[in-house]
Length: 406
Image 1 (cartoon, rainbow, N blue to C red):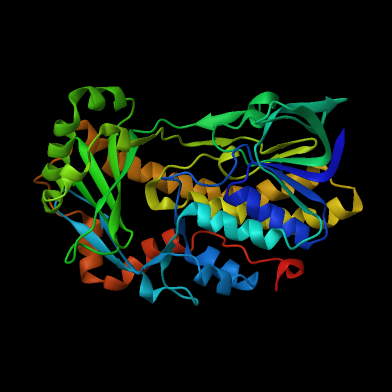
Image 2 (cartoon, rainbow, N blue to C red; image 1 turned 180 degrees about the vertical axis):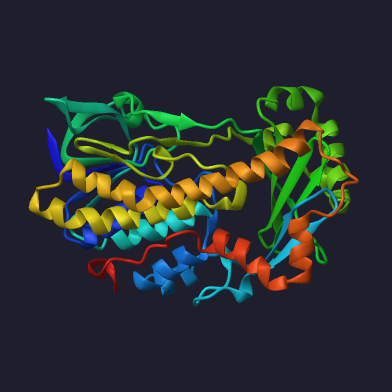
């Protein structure tokens, strides 16, 4: 049986950040990633201002600057069928007055390279956790299977589930979860971007459809929102029907929808919004999507996952080094990060109820009066700092622990 002090399951943003920080604290940490690389399209690609500041503190700003990315300095948030509120991120406090759009695989490769410099960091690719090992009601590690079919066990003082919204580790323990109904699923796809097109990020609300576009330089990453559970119905309607729907909601896309050659290019995100009632058990901690699946509204999921990892590293590094980590230590992580998660999910539910659900159900009045929030924003432009701050920085942003700063 292999052994490590902390076994992190899942090589996404939360898992890789936690692995890097704990290794810089001198903790022996092993990160398991079931795939052979990080190359998967249409994962969250937004690195928010608070995460960019964190990279500065970790001494990774120069490396990040070499990663291909675009900077979003403005957003157009849809508040009605005919109205958007313009958000200027250049007015944000702090050194980063923007959101960076970077392929997630490049971001994760950068974290992996930085962590590889630490002698106590170990990354196991092509290794999938298949279950938990237990003793006297306590989690003592994981079982795994490699792509080649090899099986084994890794014993650990602490196991951290960073394996996403379908976490097999949280399922294995049957941790209680609170779920909220969501009105939509999401199709991710891309189309070319032309000179003179809208820049930054924006959205459009129509009847029974919503569209969000993200400026990725020479192309747009599109999020086409559909009613929850309607994926099969949209695919049955066919490619041309989908193209027509895109043009109907965003006429400026008419000259490029033909570049979408198959509905296979539309990758389905099965949207979930949930949160564990307790993020931990004796010997196990869940963070990121494994603890709280986020809606894509605001694109804040990665930011929250990274902040979870930073808080967990700060709280747990010392007891892990001493070999004395307790459930009370794990509870401190939830107490630290739980309120920010609750508030963010509450705002997402508010957007679901007041914008997304009426639009996708066809109950949105396309001739309605300009919403009060937009009228106030038009009269007092500084009010747009509030949504900009909530999205780009968020509640209770975390700073790098001193032991991890470079």
